[in-house]
Length: 404
Image 1 (cartoon, rainbow, N blue to C red):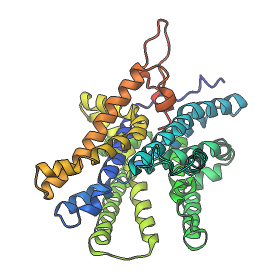
Image 2: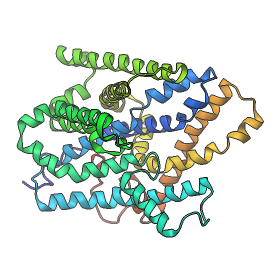
Image 3: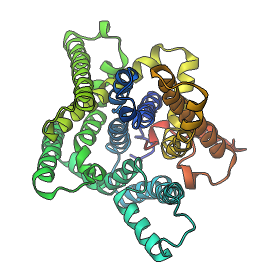
């Protein structure tokens, strides 16, 4: 059987998932500084809720990346052509944009620091520092996601072989992922103490395993994703309700925890930060998967069309939006010279950064991908809806093939 004949059906709901995930990323980045600056304002409580609630963004993208890869590749025969094609796509559409955007943010940080074009460093020193940033995913705060994705892509063929060869491993993959992830977290805390552990894929192993298991057992979870709760069997209805209740409880606890830390100086073992973040983001990723299918089925067509386009552009927006947000934050002094600083005006300015980062990066990346030939070099794979129509008949690219 050829790989074409066993290709899985397209899941347009995944673009809705991507849209919800990128909104999470944007909310967190837009409010990151505000959680510190607003502690003496009443707006702090709302800003803290937004900042903590939306922390699901990057972990959800990680789970989805794993889901997409296993969904598309698990039932296909492993051969050199398949593995070669897999690495070629990731090299062109993920690694190359990562290298180029790392250079852009490397230069941007020098511009902000006022060292660009000066003799503070030699070219050799700058190149050495850039190379160090590149191999650690630290050229800018958000690029760690692409860096750990590259790590996962390197390991994926081996993981795929392991999943395909062992039903026992498939059954216990999620507990194994959690155990290895937490063993690393504890070992790093007490022994290794590597400061940039968030740039290592093992920190997110539970999300990779959840995505893989959902993809492998998609035929079994399809009913849960597709049906209304009232149409689920009792077991499915109960587990669905348990998921939502658990998610709400853990999310509320996570928000309260950070409120106490930021406002009242609560000091606790750092493992509590890890535990609440892990529980919150894992449950949210599952809730988002369910919500994406519900939205796609019930939401107005205009909303689905908007979310689909946002999902298609999510990788490009992820790469570009911190530049927009950085320049927007330079407007702070001007803004508050026009209006008096207060809870309402401060929140308006903060949320304006979110709207600006989303809107400007959306418009720019869409225009670049639509009108500039070879834009994939910088922004990754061009969505099929933005590709110029060819004269001959051709099959549109599957949305489920996109890695982010």
